[in-house]
Amino acid sequence: MNYIEQASKHIRLQEGIQAIEQLLLECYLKPGISTKELARKTLLPTPVAAAIKRELIKAGALLQDRGVRCTKGGLTWVERKWGYRGLDHSLYHELFDETKWMESIKDVLIILEELLLLRPSADVQIDQSKCTPETSLRRAILCLKQHALIGKKILCVGDDDMVSVSIGLLLQRLFPDGGHTVTHVDVLDIDPRYLSYIEKIANERKLPIVCHRLDLREPLPENLHKQYDCFFTDPPYTLQGMSLFVSRGIQALKREKGLPIFLSFAHKSPPLMLAMQREFVCMGLTVSANFPQFNTYEGAEMIANRSQMFILRTTDQSKPEYPEKFTDALYTGEVKRTLRTYRCKQCSKDVYVGMNGEFVTIEQLKNEGCTGCGYDRFEMVDKRQVTADRYDKSNLPMNSTADARNDV
Image (cartoon, rainbow, N blue to C red; front, side):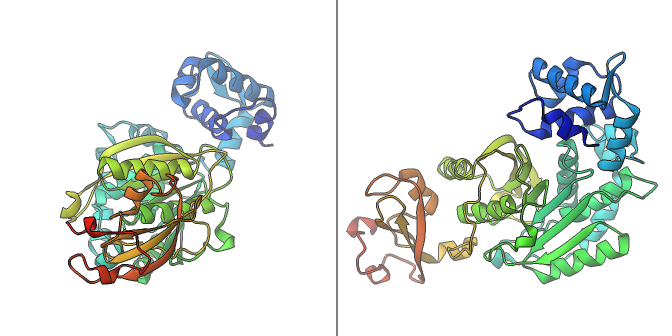
């Protein structure tokens, strides 16, 4: 019996079925919860929360008894379907308390520190940068707080920060008697060193992790499409890198509204942040939350050892910006050394971006728009390496519209 499907048949929610799932889960985790508190927990208007509650009562999952609680059938369904049987409820609630969570799982952090100390070195050519063990674990806790961890299928789009391992260790701590088999974590990465190390840890510690070697510039394999409930990514800190990694994640997500995306990205200038948010809108995503300085890295002086965490949410308009093979410049060093030709998707005018180009970056071009018609969507049609340290007209294509004003 699927209580969620039964309830959703009789109530149309703009928030999607995620809201129904969370409301049922709140009743499971806190028997006797009031309707007003349910509304606060789910961020829904009280009448909407009350309507969902009524439908779940009709379906047989909930009952009104000194507040709202699960029926025996609802209790069994949550524990079997979502895998909550055996959960350490006391620890679960402590992890939601900012003042207690670190102390509650200090033993997990100690294990993680030992494991991350032995991880491969960072490959700066593909923009790898090692986050601290505490940051990796904080990401897993954030996933738990968003009700996107237990019983879910999770994807890590790139995982040199080993969030997959943090999730696996956290699950073992939350289910001390073992036997939890519902949650699964998949890892996509280009670096065989990290994949081998994560697989070694997963095998030794019996963590529910499967690794896939993939250059994300290549199309996502069909067997990974529409499979996952959420994904993590800490992409190259270029606009193209962010859009590509998020695009691959969107392809992998189930086609449902309200699914969370955990995106780590450097603190950038207002123009680049504006360009990022244009990309979010283009991909049909909303910004649910933003946590400045959430991530801490070892070294990474260029970004002051810190980056921010976005929680994005899918909508019924979500779609990848780059569904096929990606041919644009991707990594920071590559972007800085290239001159790229972009063609406006509206008027077909060519504009040159990069070293010695009309625009320094693609985010600048998208913010200012096509020089011919003002449109802000482009496709990359040519790319060439540029080695000159200063302006040199010989580096520009023959039909470039750039003039001497570029030489400043």
